[in-house]
Image (cartoon, rainbow, N blue to C red; front, side, top):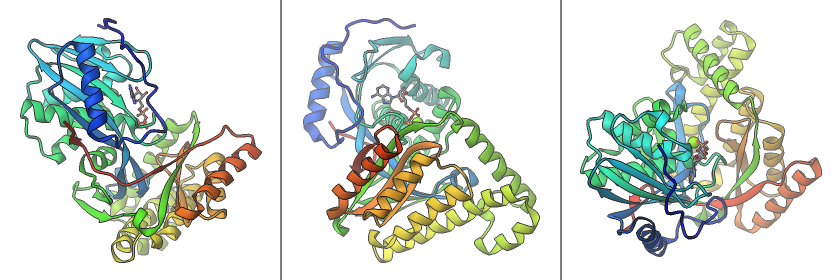
Amino acid sequence: MSAPANPPAERTTGGTGTTGSEGSTGAAELAARFEREFGTPPDGVWQAPGRVNLIGEHTDYNEGFVLPFAIDKTARVAVALRPGSTVRLLSTYGDQGLFSTGLGGLEPSAAKGWTKYPLGVVWALQERGIEVPGLDLLLDSKVPLGAGLSSSHAIECAVITALNDLTGAGLAPEEMVLATQQAENDFVGAPTGIMDQSASLRGSKGHAVFLDCRDQSVQLVPFDAESAGLVMLVIDTRVSHSHADGGYASRRASCELGAEVLGVRALRDVDVSDLEEAAGLLDDVTFRRVRHVVTENDRVRQVVELLTDQGPGAIGDLLDASHTSMRDDFEISCPELDLAVAAARANGAIGARMSGGGFGGSAIALTPAPAEQQVRAAVVRAFAEAGYTAPDIFTVTPAAGATRVS
Ligand code: ADP
Ligand code: MG
């Protein structure tokens, strides 16, 4: 059921370019817009960030380690609870009109486009026996869509933080992580793990989130690139290869096969020192998939140690090694990502790697601040020379996790 009504008076384009650090001014504007759209002021405004994974790729479903950080680009929601059982949803992005549906017997087929994210969260709360009353919600997200920054989880985490407050459900961050995972897996239908929402919900300014995907334990690790004279560039290649889904499924299958042959619960339980023996037990392809996961887990732990003891200037080589492992062993890179990484490294970045699931999406390049313009120009030039679509390049800084802003 959807009923276009009261189209927004003004449309913003959302997406790239703007940081999510507008502070309370942005929140006041969103609240005012909410009042214009829905006729009453919101009960509050909440925000949740997108994330970048510093290192630890395809380790999550192997019960291993990841090291993402929340970024300074956020999704914001203004929300008001209402009597009755109708939910009305509106986004400042695109020209999608007001969406309205009943809260009883929510099913994925009731959702349209982006509304599956907030409705999935409502559904996951209902599944936990939490009663969600009628509500109005206005979304304004500055997290670029589909660039590998997890714009979907930013929405879900903003919504669950708001509803957790407003309903008095009192869910702990770990429970909110599992509820949003359930929303993505079973309502949205995306087979994602717990990394993205853990970063969005549990991130902290100037820190990365060292997450153990086996038990969800989190350790905040200082990652203050700016103080170290570095910037983190995200290079969105703007390619999304059609075999991404099949590639993900087949990598997962290889990892499961590897764990089974090696007799462990998950590849998390294999050490670098076990690899030599593993080489004799596995076929070549499975061995290389296993070697990526095992060495990547090791690199995550090394990066955590280096960040703690020496700071961000010390991790460049490990970022490079992660990229090489994904390119050669896990085979999830693509020419555009390889070119972005190579051009960034050749022009001043101290370390660079593809970040995210692979087969497209974004690369990250840790770059001394004085070299930023040179790296940007070199990457743009290299893409033009190769005949690729121009990449979108921007900086991110480690920012706070989800919170109420007004
Ligand atoms: P990612 O999470 O990597 O950015 P996904 O495909 O998981 O990519 O999520 C992108 C989807 O999230 C979009 O297709 C859209 O449905 C939704 N989305 C993201 N930002 C907004 C927004 N500002 N307004 C409405 N929908 C959005
Ligand atoms: Mg997503």
